[in-house]
Image (cartoon, rainbow, N blue to C red):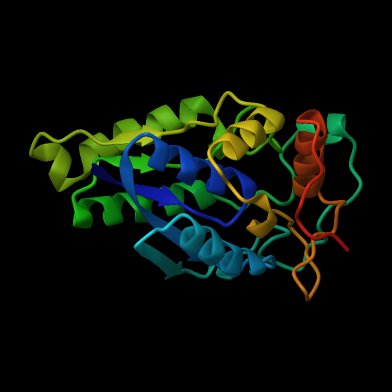
Length: 226
């Protein structure tokens, strides 16, 4: 039983990644970020997912990326709605938060050093995703290489591994894998622009990818929608 850090947003992908880490025999410590995102209801979802998974060490880090803005998630830019699959798959959308994964993985790296973990899990996906540059396999390899140069643990001979178990899966495949591991997707939150009650809009890129994934899996999404 080895410790591992799992980045946990409270969404579908991170909940599945947490379940996979547990299934592979790791003892996960989870890390969630309150970074000024408009969809802050995902933080409560992360708490629910961590509790459901029996996580004993779930930490919430406060950073404020609104100081930079530049994204529909951290500034007064409208979240795109109703885009078709071809639109979602082309270009980098305004919901991309500059350097977010690099910042979050750096925090996870620090957390891993402190608790003696040599493994970090992150639920990035390069198939059904919205064109984010920090979800690509080349980026993940580069960050892992950097991590193994930048830490006391690495200098002392311990190698850190960055796990991306969803990287080559479609959203439908991710959902089927999660259900097989007992993930309760009703408690997750994926929407970029939920209402005050936390209900998903059903029209943003994230909602559309999620709904397509459930449709591809032949299932109805149990999450609440407006």
